[in-house]
Every structure is written in C-alpha cells, then in structure tokens.
Amino acid sequence: ILLLIRNPKDVAASLYHFSNDVTTLPSYETWDDFFTDLMAKKTAWGCYFEYLSEWNKYADQENIMIITYEEVKENPALAVKNIATFFGIPLTEEELQLVVERSSFQSMKKNSEKTHGTFGNILFRKG
Image (cartoon, rainbow, N blue to C red; front, side, top):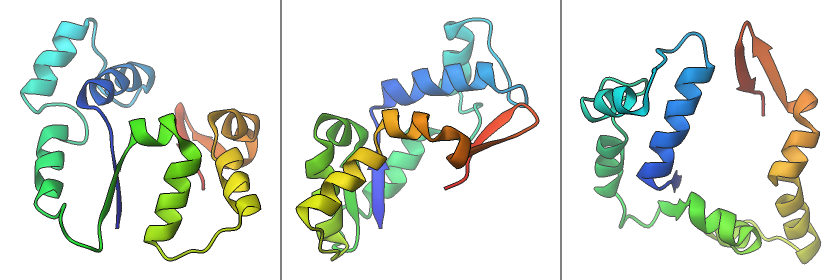
C-alpha cells in the first residue's frame, strides 16, 4: 500500500478552492466559514485529521509505504525510485526519467485532453 499524505494546511487550502470551484459541492463565501465547517467535520470527504490518525495506526507495517506530497514535489526522481523499490519494480535510469517526466504537472497539463474528462461542470481524471 502506498499512502501519499500532504500537509494538512495545504489540504485545507486546496479543499477550500476545490469546493468553491465545483458546483455540486457546498461553496463558502469566506475562508472563516470554510474553516469553521472544516473543524466541525462538515466538509466533503470527512475529516483529514481523522484520516491521518486512522492510517497512523498502520504506519509501521512493512506492506505500507508512506510518502508526503512535499517529498515527491521536492525530489520527484528519488520519490519514484523509492516507490518502485518498495513495490519491487526494477527501473532503468531511462524508465525512471520517463516516469518522472510523464508524471510532471507540465506533462499532465499538456496531455489533459487525453487524460481528463468532464461530466457536467465536474472535471475528473481518467487515468
């Protein structure tokens, strides 16, 4: 199991903007309104702190690799190498660089017409 976690502050900011951009989710006039709902566990997809707390119970199990979004962003090549090693997938240097390139924001944005779709006003990732 690969568990990717992110700084809770960044998760909150992202969810705030996402909620305001997706018409099927509750929107918020102010950050304070959103933050009140966040702390009261009234936002879409539940409480991120409870999610982290639940996964923390399994953090030491050998079949779980935890990596942070910040680690991946700071050094994508090292993150991909560590993930591949964890799953027992041998990668050549060329394959490693290809994965890093194709998983970059620039590459995904460039190829978004092939990898994303819409359903009404909702944008979703297809693969």
